[in-house]
Image (cartoon, rainbow, N blue to C red; front, side):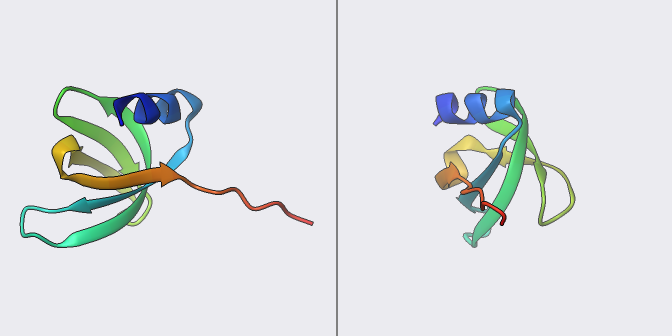
Length: 71
C-alpha cells in the first residue's frame, strides 16, 4: 500500500480510498496524497475540499482512478 500511495504522490495522481473512521463508519473518498509517514497520510480530500489526515491502519481499500477519454 505504501508503495502505491508514494507513487501516486510523486505523480500527483488522484486515488480512491475506502476507510473506516473512529465511529466505525465506512467512507469512500477521492484524495491526492500530499505526505506519508509511518502511521498516517496527509492528503487533499476532494469531498471535504481540504487537506485531511487518514490513518493508514483505517484504510480498507484503495485504487487508482480510471481516466475517461474525451471525444
